[in-house]
Image 1: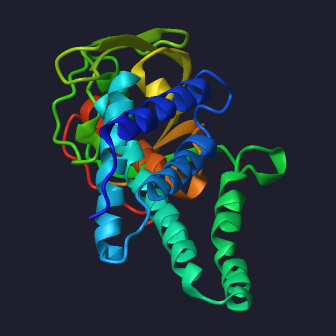
Image 2: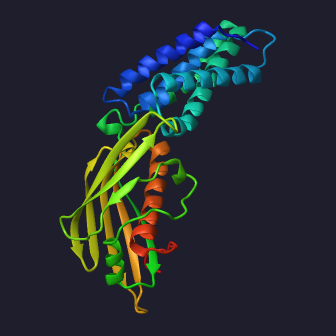
Image 3: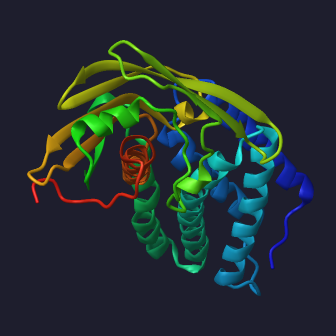
Length: 317
């Protein structure tokens, strides 16, 4: 298997850490430059330093590339003191573009045995790969290549309780103790919620402690949620402060809670989370954030409004 000096690995990790730090401190810290271009270029550099030998198979070269890419990834994360959530969110797309970078490098390497004319034609075909990567990288960097960032996620469920009883629940002390989806379990729950009222203009405070390295490297922050509107059929909240760890992943604007009385005395509630996607690319982070926002709406219903188990229903059924 092709080998690489540990000095080169450390050099790559250090260079990657510097580039990522510069990106994070700029306006491009949540862009495709970080999530697509960096792993693609890193994979090309690793392929260059581990150039093929006649006795090395493509599969062995690929495994070696992944191994070194993983070492650089983890070392860079440690240098930058990134938390486990950042690492887990970045890892899938990181390996996708590390793989694409390896494929491009391997195809270019294999064309060296062809005659000059065939080599030129082959290289032109292979050049489609970096062009495609550049197209993907362009997303979000210009207004013309930016997809809609303002989004909503809605969860609808029925409760046997009346509207008055449900709104009374919202004015009670809050404890998040329901079972969560495995994906949501990656995200730390609030330490404390200062609430206990539902008056227009009231502010509820949610306190978070995020231990980036499970036990240490602590980030503490708060979300302040203003009760912007209270009506028999509609409660609207707006986030007026968010310096919690969640602000690194999405901008939460607030919620809309709509109550529809049912003939049997129960209530249908539609809870909508309003948020802004700040991470690119949309095809990767869009579905992830939509799912997380909808699961958050479900938990909000279950732990704060209903105070009992919920089951999603299709609106209008």
